[in-house]
Length: 133
Image (tube, rainbow, N blue to C red; front, side, top):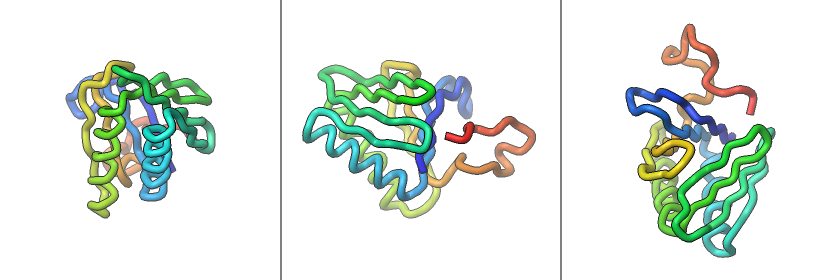
């Protein structure tokens, strides 16, 4: 499972793009990003959206639409994201890492494993973090 959303205020950090995934979702993200680094582009089909990855010199942005997310990343940013995902996979427990210096739609991408996927005491009394993505 992979869920992605622009969150306008996240733990005092301002706007972030939050990617919440389980272990299988992180494995799929790793495969898609690795393929994009090797071939220049790749696709990952989710339940509601298609994630398209394009390696583009100097890029570090996401275009988030209702049925498509376009990830435009340079090789270094794609590697940084893969490193963060690797930390989460190898950690084997819920957690998150921050990828800074993104261009848009927010300056920070938060990669999260097994957090924010279902309602918890953190989200009690608030609207759900994600729609059924």
